Image (tube, rainbow, N blue to C red):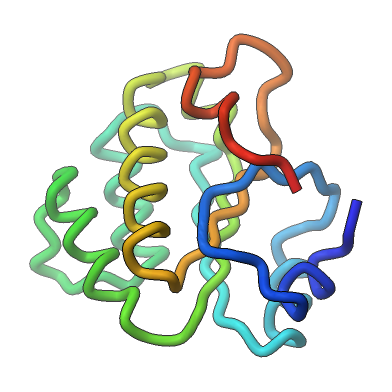
Length: 144
């Protein structure tokens, strides 16, 4: 496995990735900053549903107060945000949200993948992935 700083300095392409790492969020933040990138922590450890997920997104991405808290608003807000500097988004707690709301994870992954391919700014690293019974879209993600 290549370390994160090397991945970033060698040009990690925009996308959504499965990332097997024991690094904590603070360590990842330092590695990302050292490589000159911006960092967002998307922690869904305590999230049980779509509404909670969208609330976490609003806070993590610092969306405006008028953020609509629906899937279209998430896609639009990410698209607007993606015009800046490249960012790494560390998504932790994926397995917890999967246990409670499988559909939310599927839709979020679709939106993240679409934004990554259109914007060229966001790299989503999904940490702490479940060992089995992953949704098809999750299983299809490249692993770093």
